[in-house]
Image (cartoon, rainbow, N blue to C red; front, side, top):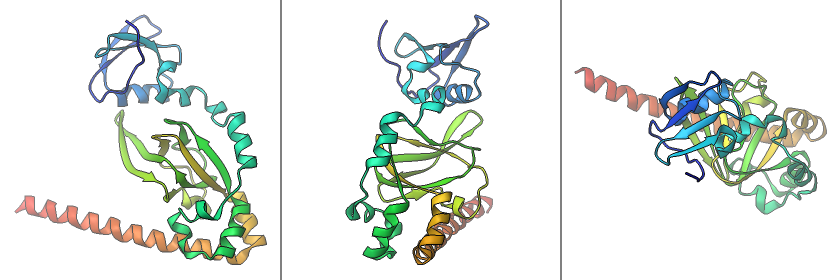
Length: 239
């Protein structure tokens, strides 16, 4: 049968490994974990039960990013990065920049890098160095981790959101993957560009850090409320 593979949340895939053994049905999360661990290569044959088709792992759109990590940023993307003009209207979409005045927004454009990603592209990979924070100006991304072979989505971010801000304070490895759900446009602020901002535009750097700090406080309070609610539920079950 012909057709394109599709993501399924059921136990829907069989893998024909290099030892000529077809491994028992697994779910998508397990299959993706095997790809990340390089147990499944790009030319590995996979069978999707519900569609009755065989396909190579590289034919699955969600997996292509793992087999072409060196080519994630193609020539077209690099060209767009260099020629893209940062507009005030676009910057106003970012909630974090609401505390900056028009003059600061104009200055900020000199330090941002534009990136456009197709659907299912890996923007940030878990355990890799933290060298850049990102602002979502169009599209949607998901923050995820793998738990026992299953994808666990920590949050979904859309236009106006940002992520990776901790790199400005601490360059420890990333703690999660970030992948696009749809075609997405992002601005990136690298650690190097932020350091240049701190030298050339110290007032702007200070305002940006203050805005990030205020947002982090809001997030911490929200997480504390969630934790408190969870504890209340847990106590009710103990009674």
